[in-house]
Length: 432
Image (cartoon, rainbow, N blue to C red):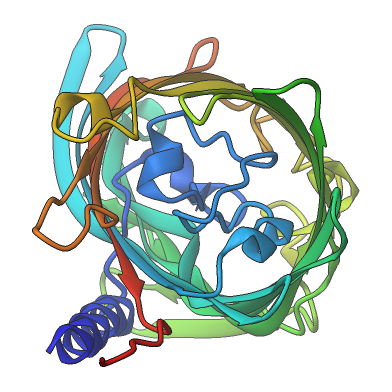
């Protein structure tokens, strides 16, 4: 019965996610998602979100950690893990004296993990990559105050990845792993002008469709430093490569008097690229009760040329200096009072805290985009029954502050909920 329930939940989760992606529903409502490939998604699971997305050196057989595929080798021979999560958020945008609130919810991820053979774990699932979602307009006077013109900006879509990964421990301190993902999705951005006079209206629509791959390699080295303590070093490498996508720009010029339109479509062959990325992490683990971890991640977006339409030259081409290198630093802690206590439920609850700081990966009119500060807290609540308490309900809360000089400031409060099914599927029972 439990296997049937698990399969039903997996099917339902994947169906909900697929429907959301088919309808181009976005996991964000932010004007900053109009730059680059959109807002880059947090690819951690809910447990790590409580630690501000820290996890490159986390290694545990009781949770899925897709941030570093080397961690998969920690799963034991009797365990089948499945973790699915969703989130809801409220965002306040502020520009000068103007304030706007926005709310949205989204499916986050669905991942699984089990052991193939001794020291070899395998993971699979669905993860987000980026989100595009915004809609706003601005108005200004034409020359000599003859009339006004309204510029409308909108965008929707995003990129997603379905992956399969393996982690192997060839010798006891060392583990290596790889995530191989199929990256797909599309996003559309449009800019349209609507004058109140006989001036022609102009609209531009940018569209991208992606069907490619994404490879991430991981390494972990776990070293005991005493009877009750261990230190783990983690590292990851993401390969940069062309995505084989042909971005298009469709320009429509409409005579407001005759309603006759002239349409031009411009295309850049193989015009999108993923950057090379690096990450290092360090974690200290004490008595199965306290874990403190820190990560440093770098993405070489500054080496990536991005499609851009030159208004003066009327040329749609790849351009440098639109994107910049991104750095993210995070620190987090996980504490549980006594996981071996026979009766006290509270002593089995995990308390998590974290903080992170990230620089932008794009420029806005030649200036740096918004820097991002994240503070987080979370709980891991065991689901008790008369057989075991291995499955966990994870809840995390995040406050994210994004700001840049002379641009919009946004504050987001996000609640994430994830359910980790930890089932003993492969145990052999003896009947006497």
